[in-house]
Image 1 (spheres, rainbow over the protein chains, first blue to last red):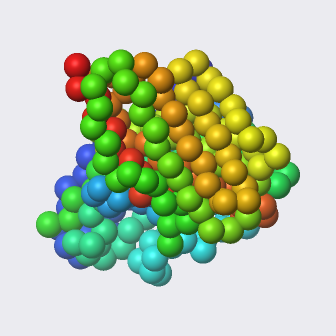
Image 2 (cartoon, rainbow over the protein chains, first blue to last red):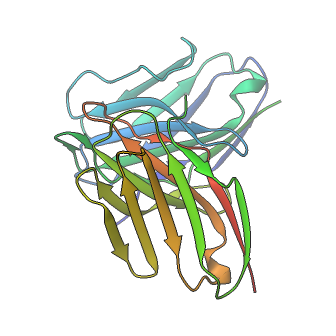
Length: 117
Length: 111
């Protein structure tokens, strides 16, 4: 079946503008994750959704960042009043479920490259 | 903060040689996973090893896990130019939903 898709693939915006990034997880995957990756760095966890449970927002760097997910489908990550430091690749991943004691294999989308001028 | 730290940060080898990457972590884990990333975009899952396993194989990949030393290694045998990519280890901690990624090893395989 189809993998995780993200849109747009690239986004260039001006400092201070709001941006919205979209993620379509693999059908049937109950868990959805957002990560941020700055150039040459590893992935930073941002937020996690699991079914209808309250999301884990512990990785969001500021209140300018928010995310929503409707049921077990599409998720949107919104960054308000963007700053140059927000420039990064934003990666979405989904997995079948949260397996007992630890995170299961995650399937990643191609990412959205955000550039804030 | 990054829990897993890969070593080396960059590795350049000739085609046909073996490549070994190491990962160290700090807290107890439920499992450890290795991912590959081409051109700074989406990651591809390579292999998952659980905390009660010591070694796992998948094709040309061999992963070891030493929980007493809190370390793991990824061996790619008979490397190919197509193996050129960044490789990340990621730890799954008991009770935590998200993976914690290291900063990665950039592997360059020269043809």
